[in-house]
Length: 462
Image 1: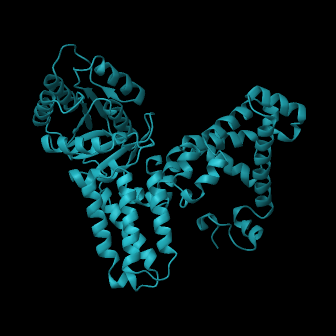
Image 2: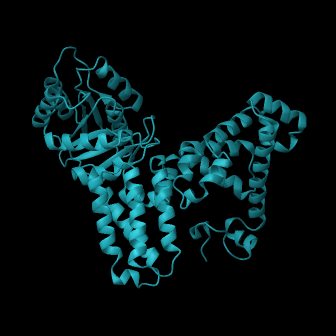
Image 3: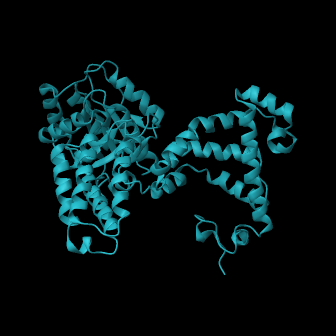
């Protein structure tokens, strides 16, 4: 998550120094904790949260079993990681509580502009597609012009049912009608989108309490904008005191803010962050996993999320087709285009690289190499500017064809050359694999061993 980049960089430098020492003193730990304290405060983490965090880490880190261990620096890093996981909510806190007897009622609350209505549609889409639940969306927002129509449009785009609009109906009556419809028509989940607030408005807060008492929701999710930092934390605290929220959804976690809101929310409210919004598209809602986020903050990567994203987005039929071609040592530019589009669906270069361990240490080199999503878009444009014959037989692409392709795709000839070279290298590797006896014979290309990072499970048994 881009939101934690600065904090990751600061903590990484401090903890790398500790890991590089064979012996640690109490003074070394205190010096590191002073820097960690400053880094957390600069990331906009609430001061009481920072004080508790530093005190807890120090208490555990200055124990004799740590300072006298063989790898004291590594043990301190583990202590910081484990405390970060606790701070973010602990393990396994992100699941929604679905009712044993449907419908599960979810009440969405939050300030205006936090992304509440869009989040309601995103959540509905996620429950429909991932959990295979029948979802009904209903807008109770009669304050903002066209708010009900906005949710209706978003629901249609998300492929989720929405409650028909009855003009002039007040929020409590809409809620009763929505609950009755959900029960009568067999919906598994009812998501109620309430009116937003420009600030903590007493009348609207009273309306929210009345709605809560009427529908008795299983979840009350506060939608908060992560870019507002400590304001979001204060909003969460007040909403929890007045209404009793059960969880938080942080939006705009793909932004460039300092990330302190996410690190303060759990401690201040005692309620977990359930989901995070990581983009504007309706599929850009991810469950919040404290242990994975803590690992990413400490630049340990999040390979589990990367694998999950791949499993969700990769077209199995396309993958099997490509696998069959690979076995034959075949790989043309149509196949390369397919792979580039799969990368884009997985979140592009940024989405993938951001989940790899140690990525912060090579961040500057990656920026210099300009590895971003524009490369994927330009490479797809280059392939789209080729004829079908050129895509299937790249070897026929001579100088004049390269110039035509560059003009057609709005790129330089040098970019066309790079793409063709990239394809040739991939194709050559696949041909080598075929000669070596497929993936099982790949060991012979690497001195009798598997290449780094290739899962052993790919090898044939026996």
